[in-house]
Image 1 (cartoon, one colour):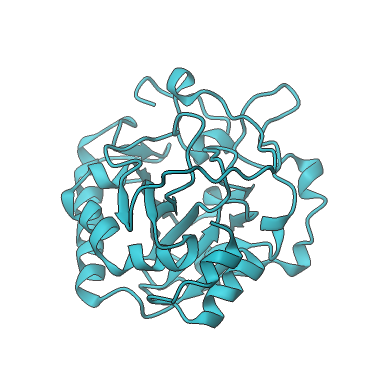
Image 2 (cartoon, one colour):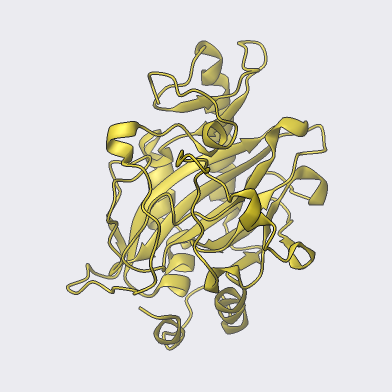
Length: 300
């Protein structure tokens, strides 16, 4: 569906102004949408998996571990394929208000794509460079939206997500270096073309939902506080969007319809998209391993 046709559908959760702002800027931050019981459950599960990570010394199908990870001091950068880690992560994706937020932004027929839980630990080593999401998992159209839920209060000092307004209508950049190696970030020459003065932080209290269109250029600064910044990330698309390359981190639920019905016709957007690596052959670590040029371990 096009933005114009989506906006003709009655809103479920978001206001008309919020939906319009999302389509105008390519992003949105909304407070007070996630019920307290769901928020408490997500936080409890996050804490349980951080505790479980202490038993691991290397990254695996569940954990992307940072170089400082130790049994007495976990350094989990990402909990992968979130909906396959615990049934409640999938229940939240499919049964909670989050899928209704997605329907307000992609249309009434909603397809689930992927999910993860990212942790930004204190210190200068947790910067995420400017990037777009869609070059890693291209679709036949550009409806995919990432919905992030802050699991801690996230003021500007804690490294919230930062977006360039209107960049979702601009170029889709090649996320490779001059040698053709995947970097997961914009090349320096493309970063130089961005209007950094217009970049907007998306801070918010615990439970804030941040929506980012798949073409929006975004990043996040270092966490300058003494507390970790966890954010659960769920990706949805319109049902008429079809992935044309393997997903970097597929889940058992990828492609499931969570609202409405399956599409009978694909929506094909003519805007070209760069081709990513074939993740089914090359394997995928995370945006952290790509942007820091870390060597992927066997589990990646």
